[in-house]
Length: 294
Image (cartoon, rainbow, N blue to C red; front, side, top):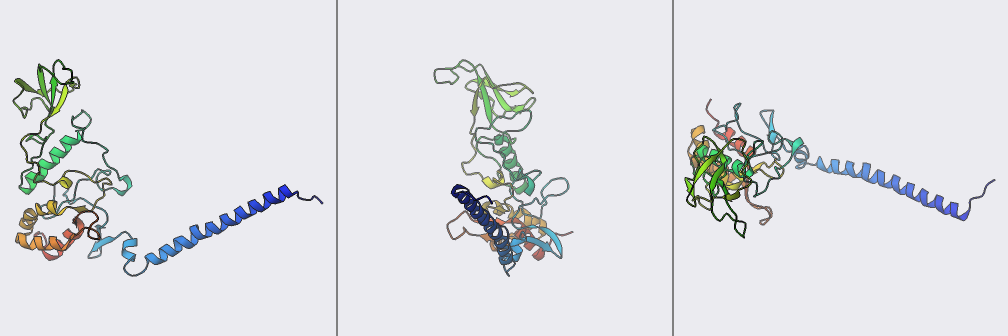
């Protein structure tokens, strides 16, 4: 009968101990802990949150208070009687399976054939919101037409990399036959951009313009959240929508503003984050109090 050596016995004990630890941890972390969490999640007050904070109206599922959604018609236009959410680039918008940001930064200012720049996207959104809400949609570095106010200045360079004497200036985000937002720059006539032309050889110069430093259209109205699923908007963005929503519902703005105040949450614990408005909860409450006329 073979006898285990001291070395073999030690090896066997170590592996049996490891196997026992694996089995115990598998039971604890794979069975006991998930079941305990599931049981706690079924307690009153927690069950709805654990199920996704789903909201129903008259038995019909209308969304989740944790995930933003669009309030638009079949043509993609904003529904007049509803507060609008912030933009989303998650899939076709608010897609939990495609949560994402654009990953574009402040230096993305020149449109390409494949996509508009981040600057032009922000400018277009700001103009659209301004036109819809009846406020000034202008913002710094945007043209009145809603694209990035960016010039390509061509000419000999100086020691600092600037153009010492411009010989041609092109408004790179305004394709011909558009009229450039600026007539001339440093004494040189500004021209529109020829389709497909590359103006990267020029010095790229964003033009601030005369828009106020604090635009009427808030930042969250023109930029998407990092996840693309944010269900909240700022009180400032909600406020500029009050007049439109009240008009579409046939009630005084003060009544809509009172419902808005009831759905405005302060900073978490008084100091975390910013005040916010849950758009879905607000629209549901408005439908219950002041339905949109059919």
